[in-house]
Image (cartoon, rainbow, N blue to C red; front, side, top):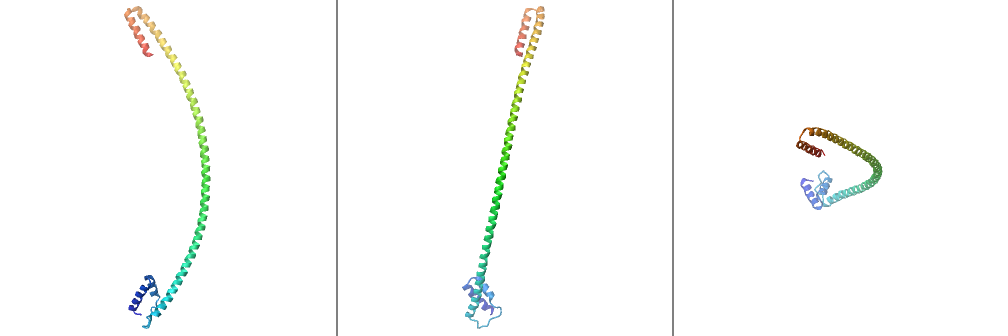
Length: 187
C-alpha cells in the first residue's frame, strides 16, 4: 500500500472512529504493500477482526481491573479493621494511663494541700510566738524607758535643787519650764 493509500485510509478511519483507535488500527495493518485489488470489504473485515480482538482484550483488562479492585478493597477493609482495633486499644490504654496520671496528680495535690496546711499552722504559731515575744520586749522596753525617765527626772530634780539654792528665782522657773518641755517632747 502506498503512502497515499495509507493516508487516505487513516483519514477514513479517523472519520469513523477517534484518533487513538485509528492509529491503533493502522498499526495492525501488515507492513507489506497490499495489492491494488484490496477492497473496502476486505479492509472492513481486517479492521473488524482487529477491533473485535481489541474489544476482547479491553474487556479482559476491565475484568482483571475489577477483580484487582475487589481484592484491593477487601484488603483495605481488613487493614482498616485491624487499624481501627489497634487505634481502639491505643485509645483505651491512653485513657487508662490518663486515669492513673489523674489519680497520682490528685494524691500529690492532696499531699501538697496537707503539707501547706501544716506549714501555715506552724507559721501561725511562730507568728503568734513572735508577736507575744515582741509584746514582752515592748513592755520591757517601756518599763526600762520609764525607769530611765524616772532616773533622769530624779537626777535633774537634784541638780535643779542644787542650782535653785544658788540662783535667783526667775532662772529656776525658766529651767523648770525647759525641763517640762523636754519631758513633754520625750513623751
